[in-house]
Image (spheres, one colour):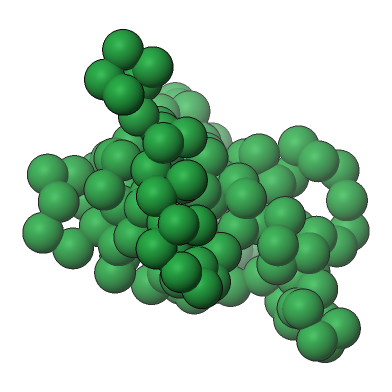
Length: 153
């Protein structure tokens, strides 16, 4: 690792520990030439599958696009930003675990809906109403019955 102070290539690690809930390794380093200390973070580079749109076009995965798509149905809902970030992480993990190089936008939408359903029923219905493109009130009613527990019907 190159020293950011003197650009020497000879540095040594003097301390390592996990950071960001185990997703990163924080390393304290010292330059053998100028003796300055600095911190580096090591993270795994994850390659996400590409998204196959309904028209057949293929796009790279965009985490910001996913984030925007769930922020709208979650507006004015009692869901914290931390909960939203955790949900995005779960969605991305589930997609990676598929082990595919490409995933359909429909498949991604289904994963998002299942996570929203667990997090907030209202946000789920909001997302589903756009995603599933309900054409009439009966289709909407049917979706509501699918999420309502049997004893409430």
